[in-house]
Length: 317
Image 1 (cartoon, rainbow, N blue to C red):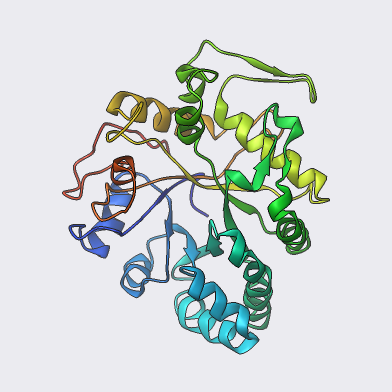
Image 2: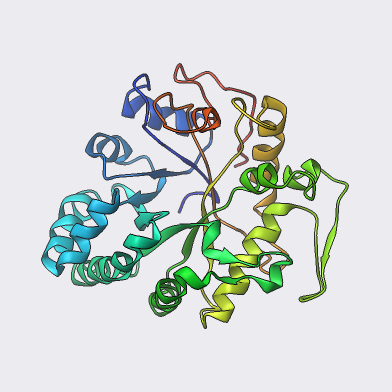
């Protein structure tokens, strides 16, 4: 069922190739999994028969609110966007919300429950898992990793979500960006440690583990928080991780290539706390020229919109 490496297919741009061309580019680049941020029907049609594994986001907070509103809304959504395509499209996970703001976090679990109920009714709940994608700030005290715990301001939402994931056999989707941590604290974090280059080791006296890169330390802090929430059997899928090649501090082609190739090569072995394959999605397939915010936001792509690589990168079989 696809590989351990995926790439996020963001579409916040006015100059991207057709959906069918993008699917071909995934295949020719040896990328076996994809994330899309809403149930884009053209993309889903283009994915039919491709054997590319998929994280399917429901869309923004309005979509989450709709799914939380009623079981029938969720059943209609699953029928239109999942049953209409599966198994021709290898939907693996449904992401109910991406980095949902605290004020709306109360919608996530009701929406997840409704989508799960619809999948159960459709006979698909063993094949397709329901989750939500969180960013690193749901964790507080992430250094050393063994101290990781869900942030008090989201604990009331995250602990029940973690237990729901444990009960349903679903992973937690986590967006993990060493770039953001490094940019925020370059005096204490070394660039080589942030970009999978050798030369720095950090020992965690709390769990006796030794860390050689920041990514592992961040993921293991989330694992520590899941354990403290009574959900130690929940695995993590890294639903976004990447490094910008231009537009800001430490954003260069060399750093982006070192990080993303390092990530792709590393995730087969997992983390010190959880050895084994760590399913990971690189952000992002393309530089997206209409993304708001900091200029780095428009420079996370592996490819330019003309399908030329921003820098060489190799996805193993």
